Length: 177
Ligand SMILES: [Ca+2]
Ligand SMILES: [Ca+2]
Image (cartoon, rainbow, N blue to C red):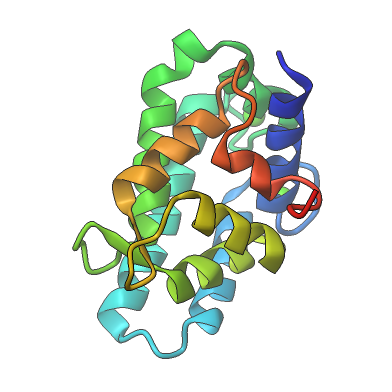
């Protein structure tokens, strides 16, 4: 596995572990969902409920695919398996990507507005400069939107052990270097 790929999953695991107990559990995703709802106070109830449901479905997808010892939580080793063994987890990663990308598109028009993308990624724990660099790498439209498809592809690439120089690398480290 490329060092870049390892750094990418280390980062995302650390951020998803919102309560810092070293494991991904349902509590982490409830915490992230609360943060994103607070970050998007202008969204209507339908959009908020869609986001909440998407966070819960993301967790369900993740734990059902990765909790190999069935203790109801995902350790780093369990999480890293999806990058170490991409063929085995191909389908699961497509599912993760789909449910995470859906978070950015509560109105299902196939486009993600920058403010919502920023709110969502900030709630997960990424830094603002990294989030904007990533959004720009997805080549937003004149109305500053990216397609769900670009985001979905970006997430799948993020988990590829051999990929380097992808938009997802903007999330790791200082994006200006
Ligand atoms: Ca945790
Ligand atoms: Ca486990």
